[in-house]
Length: 306
Length: 269
Image (cartoon, rainbow over all chains, first blue to last red; front, side):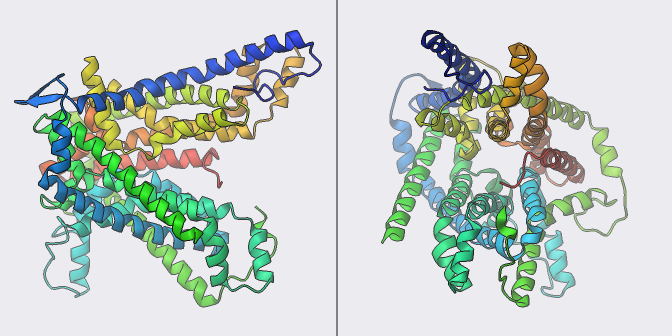
């Protein structure tokens, strides 16, 4: 670890005699370490250690609503081969891909408009998106549950405008309801990384392209899009990870037939008390997500390079 | 931003109108559910439609519900403790991190704390639960707070890191040259200058804690927070008081996020 000019101490003084200089550098090192230590210790103790404990528990042996510290691979065989769980995986993956792609598309257009079409409203719109990011995860899901219900606003609106004559019961307890609610709280999460990637593009670059006669579409295709792939990747990854590990939305909006892998994890932790199996499913889930994103981004890099 | 350099071609009038319509539709989609919950919470009939008149009936109902009141108290406690602990840890970390020279260490120190931002709450939640179980620590509101600090810490760290980038360290030199000690400098120069960012980060931490559901679900035990009460009652079936609880949660988180933005923490990048 080397130091820049001592930030809260005093700047490194070249005029100091070498010996004192070294002693001072050592003091600075010590105080930097002292400042970094409390959050680092906290982070390790309450984030890293819990995940290690989860890993250890995933090898424990379960029987009769209890588990013991006898190590086994049984939980992983079960997590990887259970046909019921495979269905859950397919459903979760399908929705995660759909939601992430829609979020990226909607957010990209939104961010593009903010930056280049309505720049005068940029501040206000950015602020609104940001505030909606922090507002009401559970409340949103609950709102959709009541809005999509038999006598919710969506049905009464459709009836009052004579689009339908009797309430649709199938709005709730469906993949449609899950996707709508997920889009509702993931779009702000998609807008932010894409927007900040666009914000980093030098306006001079775009002006130069314009002066050279490039069309709007050409500018987007050859300058904006390539320079915002990081933002797109971040938006996609955020949404994909969040959806893959979601359980509240399918629980409250999907009905018993549309559950996610996350609901099975919850079931093992809450109902059967098979924590080791729950832990094994959770860890295979995160491994799956990492592998899929790795492959996807690897392919993306190949495609964009050629 | 130098993007006002020169007016750029911005497509035709039709393009601008359709852009407005698009932005309007997206914002409508984002905010409609929230607006509806708040509006319906003032409805005198227990239905989700808007046929009844204005009434504070449901707010009176939840204010007289000891379970809701207790949960409200715990949510407030969790928010305040999360803000204080994550502010102290985040400030300390950011002050240490900016002292590092550019290089692998600095990159690591600035990246690793951001991992919980993208990490699924479900996994962190079950991880925390097994951790507490293995240590023989019971589930409680304190167990929840310990987890919320992990979620808030990245934001505090980001906000304080950005504030320190703009910090004029020459002021500290000046104070030292005038004979002030390290503690005096921290108390009279560093802290007052960082106060807006620190306050903003604390508002943000509080918003995160108030709104947080998954970690609380796994680690609160019987000491439920407000989102947990909401969840429990959604599962029980229709209860019109839910809109009032939801509105209270919404208004508090939105107000905190708004305050955080006002203290210029969430400035445009």
